[in-house]
Amino acid sequence: MREMYERAIAADAVAETILASHGGGGNWGRALFLAQEALDTLSEADEETCARIVLWFLWQWTDFLGLRPEFDTCSLCGKPAPDRYSIREGGMVCDSCSGGSSGLATGGACGLVEAGPGCCHWLETTRKIHPDQLVRYTLDKKSFREAKVLATAILAEAIGKRLEGWENT
Image 1 (tube, rainbow, N blue to C red):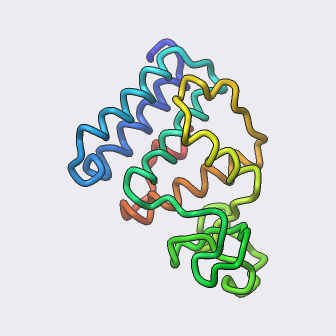
Image 2: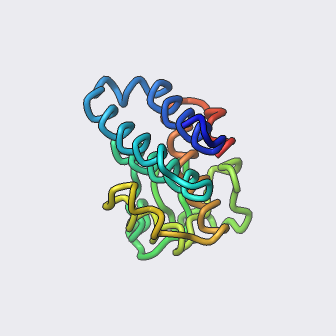
């Protein structure tokens, strides 16, 4: 891990997430399994893949905590294909239910986080794979940024704070 700065930072983000959420409420076995998958993959990862592994882990962690939103429909009205996450509602919301807010947050400041199709597709596709396959699942910078903001906004709400390790990856 210490051979590459990105690996060390990514490993720190994984550990910090687990500790800050108390192992997911005490399910240390599952927490350690997810950590082991991420850390084993990080030990061989290149610089670019490290950030994707952290993102994969954070998304797995939202699922582990029972916080992963469904992307298909608005959590309030059931309309199809919303493209934003409401921190207040804890789910995806459509234009009507979000008040048509055009000023989406990049960090959840207004309570809404953009989650476009690229972001949602990558998160849904990669949550079903082992992290060692992430080298084959790239995503554009905008989608990566959206996915990271979404995962960290969900976890920050659950934990009660944003973790420093997330900002460095």
